[in-house]
Amino acid sequence: MFALQKVVVYVLLLFTAIAAKGQYYLRGEITDEKEQPLQNVKIYLHSNHLVYYSGTSGGFGIETRQLYDSLTISLEGYETKVFPVKSDIYQHLKLKVLPDVSNRNRPKLISITKDLKQHDRFRWFLNDESYFQVVENEYADAGKFPNTGFSLNVNKASYSNIRRFLNTKSTVPPDAIRTEELLNYFNLHYQPPAGNDVFRIESQLTNCPWNPNEQLLFVNVNARQLALDQIPPGNFVFLIDVSGSMDMPNRLPLLKAAFQLLVKHLREQDTVSIVMYGGTVGIWLPPTSGKEKEKISTSIEELTASGDTPGESAIMTAYTLAEKTFIKGGNNRVILATDGDFNVGNISEKALEDLIVKKKQTGVYLTCLGVGMGNYKDSKLETLAKKGNGNFAYLDDIHEAEKVLVKELTQTFYAVADDVFLNIEFNPAMVKEYRLIGFDNKKDAIADSTGILEGGEVGSGSSVLGIFQIRPTEENVFSDGALLDTRLAGVSMRYRGCGDTLRQKINYTCPRNFAHFKDIDAELRLAAALAMFGLKLRQSKYAGNITWDDIELITAAAVKADNYLQNQFLQLIDKARKIYPSKKRKK
Image (cartoon, rainbow, N blue to C red; front, side):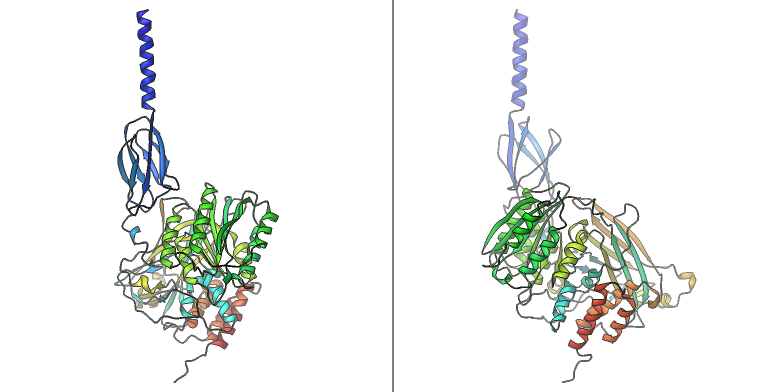
């Protein structure tokens, strides 16, 4: 009997011990150094080797059997830290921003040649429109500065915005001309990557058509094309500006027609929500399946314009809604459609940048669609798109809306890689000096000596072209056949897969594969014409003796007869010729 009592007591003590071990609930919050809550922070509990994440307010609650335990917490952009914790005490944990991330509020570079100084120029004003003041890339000595890099942002807004100016018989503000976006617009020389490769890199060397003493090096980066039946489900939040400034035919009515085109191509597995802002901010359409096309279309059609523009509050609402309907492994994206004229709340580029950098941590992408004229804020939308891991387009008419939202659906909304940037190291034996055409930096970014290069998002099936003007060495020009394979430059491209923290790297060698300009691929010749067009429009000091006839002649020989957009470019050249005098008039 006594033995039985001992067994009962032992069992009771055992259950008590087990219960005691499982009674703790470790609670706390994680913030940055400014006491701002951090969400989606990775929390590793050492006692059970499990991973947890902080909530939207930075808070967490974890069951543990240990009174004394320890946590390792980490978040992209912040220092990883280990904290000893006592489970019955509420934890206030702080993460410190990494040194390179603390510079995010500084203007970022699009391209960089280390230690190379660049010059300024005057600011351009146009009504109430705003553009970042940019400084053209200059020639760099390949012996002293062999390395240069640039970000692969696949934005296309500049071309359609230039078209808008020329169609209204207006000159184009120089800072609105971003040559890399003229090339991106046509997705030229696309060559699909082999097998399961994410990217394919090619290069071509030729003579420069506007300077017989120089060469052009084309560096072409092609992204994998996702099949329409294989793209992940979409969680789209349409963030539509319905403020008073949008009450014009080329603004809200154009956007409504554009979104109606997109709705037709939604699938059952896609989810759409609509947040509108104009006077107030509201959820106009709660999360709705893509199969309910009539319901979504009706909601879009009922939008009307009035009130002021509380942009900051609207962006926060859209992101919060996107987070609530977040699809793991899906395409979670806010699509902001506006003229960019925010006039309520934090409206500066810097304040908006701070907001978007925080929201980017949620895994939600941002695409910006700009419209309008007169008060169009190109600089604000460019900032939002770059900081939101997204892209940026300008819709000047319904044809452009169809191109961006239907024909190039996967390029616009489905990324294959994030934080993509390319570095190229020139061989001084082959190259005396070089200059990157386009990818020009903002003036205030040039003034920042920290030299931070910010990568971009690349969409499915995108072709990105970089063009370098090269002043060749004698060995390059006069080499015989035995030296044709001499290395011209080495390319190193880095990127991250979408939703992945691991950085990937691709190396490529640019051979001296020289071919005469007339013999290279037609789309590369068209790319050269587009670069000449950009130089001529902005009246660049590097344009030399380029004439409109030169551009027209190269374009006419390169365009495809059945390609509407390429042939439309020929018409734009003729319009520009009539607007811009061929020579500067003497005073």
